[in-house]
Amino acid sequence: MRVSVVLCGHTLERYDAIVDAAESVFDQSYEDVELVFVSDGNPDLHERFEAEFGDREDVLTHCNDENRGLLVSRNNGAEVATGEVVAFIDDDAVAHPEWVGRLVDAYETEDALAAGGRMTPMWVDGKPDFLPEEFYYLVGVTHRGFPEEAGEVRNTSGSNISFRRDVFRALGGFDDAIGGRKGDKNLQGGETELAARLREEYHRGVYYVPEARVAHKVFDYRTRPRWLLDRAFWQGYSKRGMAQFVPGSTDEEWGFLGQLLGDCLPERCWSLATDPDAAEAKQLVWLLLLTGTVGLGYLYGIYKWG
Image (cartoon, rainbow, N blue to C red; front, side, top):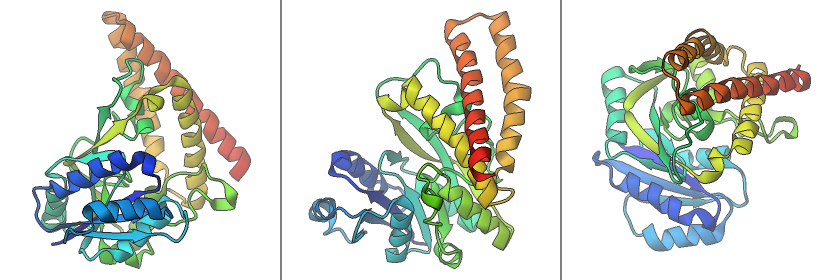
């Protein structure tokens, strides 16, 4: 089973990170892997990548005629791909050497239609002591509360998700209007919307493989309080938007909110009361603050989307 890994980039400023991601794909223990690199409307980036890796038999490249965005780039990469499975990784991520092999196991043993794994943090400038693990999803990392065991979920991260290529094409790929509906660039959730269509069409979810790990580089700016609050607000807004466009797509979020308030919050309060700790206290405050900010974003989404 050949696996095509689609990696997209758009600026030379992140070329070193793109190379890190590409080399992690080349270093996979599973042998039948090809890398599809898509330059999003940047000929210079495409030429540089071609000059460095274009002579490899396991590399295909494509350059969009203009800057089209991540979802269009991923769709174009899937069209170029030749594998039976198409997987996606971001340009600020590094795959574990067994990543592809673990995904292939899910296709072969579970007859999965789509599969994805766990995102782990790579703290580039140090781990923030105030950020609660329940909100790691804000920095592109699998959060506390996400399932621990293998099995079907709605979707995994867009930087660690894969599909049988024929299923991906039958579904029409990612909806490139996500993030651009009614001119709104802040709406997120391309993989959520696609996974919802997968569920509707095939009555199957994405098979989650915790051992299929991809590390996400968390740069300094992503751990700044202002950035996190802004991210949380637009996450809430996006959840409302996705609920409007894809009914039922946010059921997991409501379940997580119940878990957050019913389990995680009381557990943290009890832990802090019985064993006071400054870092734990900060995380409790930020858990409440980020929960409220996501809620404000959701309310703004109701105002805007209805």
